[in-house]
Image (cartoon, rainbow, N blue to C red):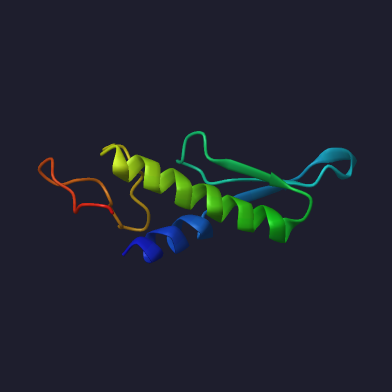
Length: 86
């Protein structure tokens, strides 16, 4: 389910070409504070995926209950409980 969630979130990503050949900026709408910047579009996508994965690990470990629902995939705890993340 986690892989499906990440893939669904990445499909929603938006990228911008920065001025003066500074590279690319990427973000995923609804994921506050989650963004990436890299010289190439491919590197920006890779960096954005890595940032998303790290962001999810932190959110899940801290039992944050404000994760965006993406394409019907909901990682938020139900009844205050969530599967333990190793």
